[in-house]
Amino acid sequence: MAAKKTSKKRVSGRKAVGKKKYGCPNEGRKYSLEGLVREMARNPELAKFIRGLLCAAHAGDKDATECLRSYYELGDSDLKKLCIPKTQKISLLQSDCTVCNTDLFLLDVPAYVAAKARSRKR
Image (cartoon, rainbow, N blue to C red; front, side, top):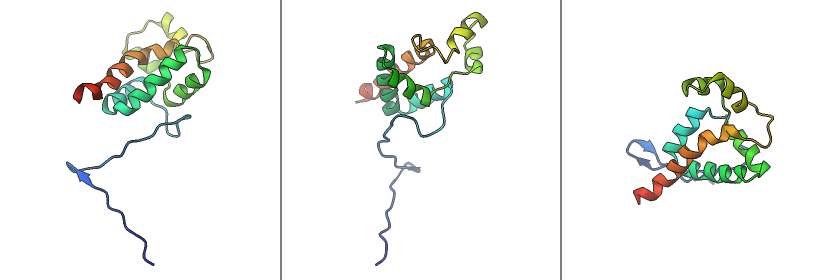
């Protein structure tokens, strides 16, 4: 018996994309700060997912923090672009700090705005 062929619909010359599911840990590569902000702006579903993890991480959920770290890695170049002083870079780049999560604060506003983008368009 011949295998069924499936066709993918094209919308405006682009492949139609279904709802992508996100999970922990991230199976793909880590995003930089700028990369994750851009992706959240383009994809409100990802923004909602990241925002939920941020809320849980700020409340002390270590699993949420670990999951976020699988999606996002703050680099020195990210901090240079933001003009963060050297004295602050040290605390932001401390990955072994289990309580502070100060680097995650850089994602809060973009995640909130991008997650709300879809509800404003409706």
